[in-house]
Structures are given as C-alpha cells and as structure tokens.
Length: 288
Image (cartoon, rainbow, N blue to C red; front, side):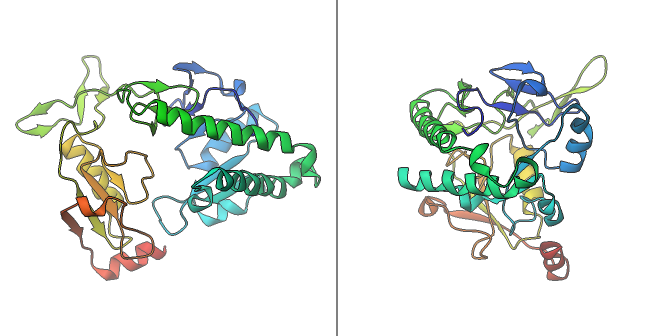
C-alpha cells in the first residue's frame, strides 16, 4: 500500500528456483518493488538476490514467543531488516487501521534512515500513508466480496481466496490427495523422475475440529504438518495465521501458555489431541 498501492500482489514461491508470481503469471523479481514470501532464510535470500540490486530490504512479520514463527533475533539487528510483531498489525476499525499504518510508516522511517536519510517525510510521505489505508480498506472489501466464491477463486490484487481468506500461496494448484489402502499418498512418482506433491484440501461438509494442544517446544508444528499429511485436510492455529478460520481439521494451540489462546469459536470444539514431551527437552527447545 505504501509503495505499490495499485499493483497485484507478487508472491515468491518456496521452490528451488524461487519463482515470483503476479496475477497468475511468472514475473521477474526486478519488476516488483514489494514481493511477499514465506521463506525466512534471510541470509540465503540476500546472498542470492543482492548482486542484482543496490540493496534489499526485509520486513518480517513474526511472533517472538513462538519459535516456529520467528527469525533469529540477531537478524532483526541488521540495518536493512525491520521485524514487526504480528500483534502490532491487528486492528478492529478504521481508526485502528489508520494507527497501524501510521505507526508502521514511522518505524520504516526510523529503521531505514541509514539508507534514505533522517528526514523520512521526504521518501515516505503522508500521501503514501493515505494510499496504504485505502488499499487495506479495499482488501477488506475484497475479502467480503469473495466470501461466497469457491475457494479456488482468487482476487489477484490482494491474494484473497474464495471464502474471504487471504491466500497462503495464491498460485498453488491444489491436487486431490490420492488414497491407497486407506492412507493418503503424499507424492506421486513421475515416469521420468521427480514427483508431484499433493496439497491438503479444505474439509468438505461438516467436520468435528480438534485442538492439537501442547506446551511450546513439544513439536506442535511437526504435529500440525503430520496431521495435514495423514488426513489431506487443512489445519490451523489459534492465531489463525493462515486465515483458514473454521475450515480446518485441527487447531494448534499452546493455551493456557501466553503463546496461545482460545479461538473465538472455542465452544464448538469438543475434543483435543494433547502433545506431551519430556520437560527436559521441551523447555530448552522453547527457550533456544
């Protein structure tokens, strides 16, 4: 919204060649100013792409109390890296939205002053902030407009899927998970080598969601992936980080630890999978 208010979202897929996709087509990284990615190996990204640019900047959304959703704190000290807590981006109304944009814009000015000068108002203006607010308002409207569309439908400007959910990867072609002997096949061997990876699907019809509950450091993220792999169905977490809402077979949570919380539809969840790990391993893992 600040730098490319009218552009379709650009997304770098986490594949070996790191393709950048925009409006359903592959584009050159140099043709975008802002590119979204879920790859948090900042050093590898910097080393790979820095030679083509004067500088590369990273804005990382993270949860510092979740070892699975953060980068190493040392990386946040780099002058070209701005780390933002997920909680700082939440808003409930228009005034809250304006405050989030204003606060984040000021953090941009302060953090990147080394590169652009101390007078941040010269390179990040009030007009750019207003454009960012308008784009986010438009995105909220797009989410409402897409609520009645099938999930496969995508609003390319904002990366919003049908059902009003922000896409995790807007260009993934979901495939049906094949079954054999009652188990889901995770990949299909191709005749000339390589394989097709099958992706989890949103549950169809009524499904009884379960909590996957654990103390931090007990392997919750691994369990999350295992559940998706075995069932072929989406999973979610208590912070709704992947914007899947209720359309999940399980919800990862660390509640009542302060790294977790109960979801707003907690009263609809009637069962739980409790993941237990020896405290001698869990506690050091959490604080590592």
